[in-house]
Image (cartoon, rainbow, N blue to C red; front, side):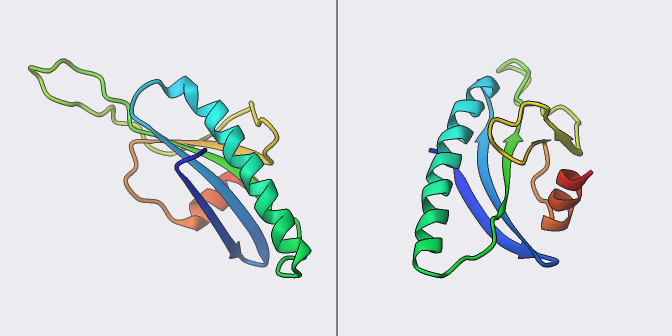
Length: 116
């Protein structure tokens, strides 16, 4: 399963984010995002079956990555990276986004990155 699921409406569109957070072993996120996507597909069908959702959400896989290079003597050092990277490996998502070293973000930034 993934770490979090976020569903929202933004400017008339429905978005479904499957979120995975990592500090190490970054490459293992793809399998976990895929499991989150399968779970979300089930939830969407359940909502549709009971008449709570009509439109098909735009599905976005989101990796939030906090790399931790450095030795124990120096303490933890975070790379100074920011921005949102769009992945070509979409794995059944409409979009897969990667965010490094950002402790906060706005839904508008995520939607804009997915559409660009």
